[in-house]
Length: 417
Image (cartoon, rainbow, N blue to C red; front, side, top):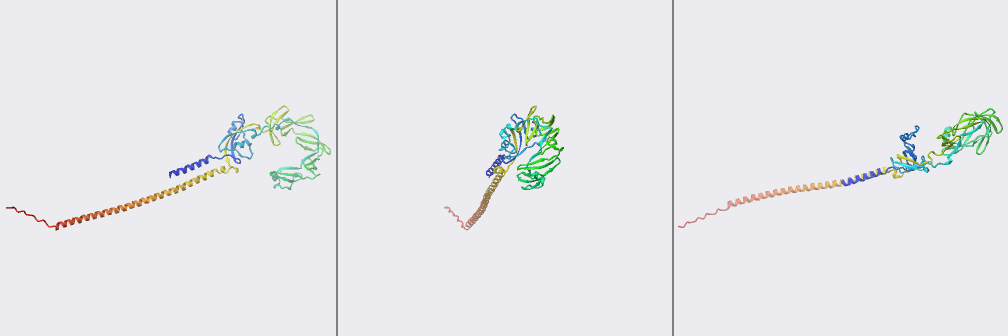
């Protein structure tokens, strides 16, 4: 029995060991938390999730929370090489991932690097400009901003009130709504600045005509424009710009030069430039121009990440065995112990029955022996009594024969004379 118990225990231990050895591995669809240190080829640390490493590398940012990065494998939230490098890692494993530019931030694109003069614009002090302006007939808004303003979800065909005239919802996507201007030709709108008249409506645009009075002030991007003269199609305005103007290249100074104003910027290397939702960096500055690079700062670089998986949460895409391995091995372990228990219980019961049977047989034999011994003793006693009786009878008979036997006469001898 000890042999079977030992075999059962060893089998259970093997299954348990197998369950421990086959650990969770990162697969597509999993959500993972990782600590990482990102380095360039010269060992310069450019990013990390670890506070002490950031401080030691002098890249600490007090506005950032240093903690493990959480990402879902396959959703494209990080560069492809980083996600691909995590696949197959076990929980708690540390690995160094080498990411070439093609799997990182791509090679440097020369078209994203351009030169810009420091003088952005020259504005005449007095100039003739058109009285007409075109705006798109259809514009886009987010559904969230639409709901925030109108308090309801948009539907195609819905009529809404815009600032100066009605509008109509013409298209709805997952996150945006397309709205068409619905003004009336010839209608005039007077605002705080001046009067505007709807001059024409085309398939793609609304044509507005400025109808100011001489002396009116019209605000513009560079400052105020004072109306000096009017014709049917144009107006003469005098510019009174601000001293400084915010531009996409940073703060620009407005410099008076003869009959014009010069709008000039003076950026420094490292300044950030935001243009059409792209972030660029000033990489070079000369006396009259500067170069802006809109490539990612790590474009063209081979990256080296030392990553440690902290937590792996299996996703829906994970394999059945990988996802339920602990349940499988736990179930197998329970089955093994159950079988061992049943087997040992039956074996124990069989052995107990045999022992009881053997004990019962032994008792019976002992009882038989005791009975036989008793009978033998009784028989021996009977025999002994019989022998004694026979001996007694024999002695009695002998005595009787002795008493009844006549005595022999004595022979006398005669002496011869």
